[in-house]
Length: 109
Image: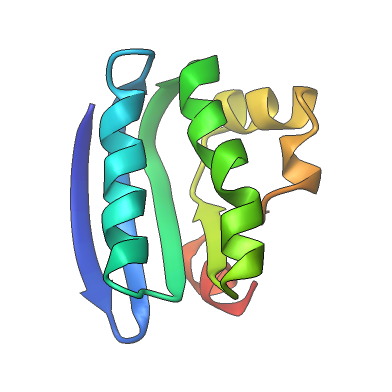
């Protein structure tokens, strides 16, 4: 897995490429933690290059939901392939997280 981080106006975008599994999920969690510590209030996950996500990766997002809500953080995931999006849907995570098609929708979510 590779992570790329960039600022786009008020949005902090974390691009996730490759596979998020048990060994790489910690890096994703640290990237989100870093964004929160830097007081970014608009965090977007770019999943256009995400090929696979294991339960550990899903757990990173689930474990942050309350923190995002409590701190007023605008959080969205965009660009997921149908295969990866289906994993979120099967587990009902699409009801707990903002999962949208593209960057513009993520900014408007």
